[in-house]
Structure formats: structure tokens, C-alpha cells
Length: 68
Image (cartoon, rainbow, N blue to C red; front, side, top):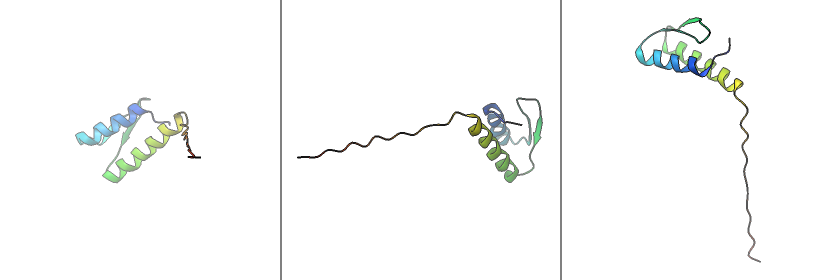
């Protein structure tokens, strides 16, 4: 099951509200029992979201100057 940003948003809102279960975008119910369960689930969601996102390319430009 691949998680999406709305799943992560729902998890964060549930945690802030003290709710220990949520329904994902695809209709599945997920429960967590502790903060460490929440953190593991959140990490899994972030991994899925990152894997589905296009790769970001980082570019640098180095400029040199010679006082010759």
C-alpha cells in the first residue's frame, strides 16, 4: 500500500487530536497504540511519499575570478 500526502496529513492531525486510528485515502483503517508506533508509521508514510515523488536534482555553480 503506497501512502500519499493526505494520509500523512490525516495521521498528523489524528496525533495532535489524540486519536489513535485513521482511514487512509484508499479506505483502509490504520491504528497505532503508542508514540513510537506513530513515529514508525509516519516514517513509512514519508518513505512512500518520497519514493513516489520525482527525484530532485541539486545543481551548484562555482564561479572563480582571477585578478590577473
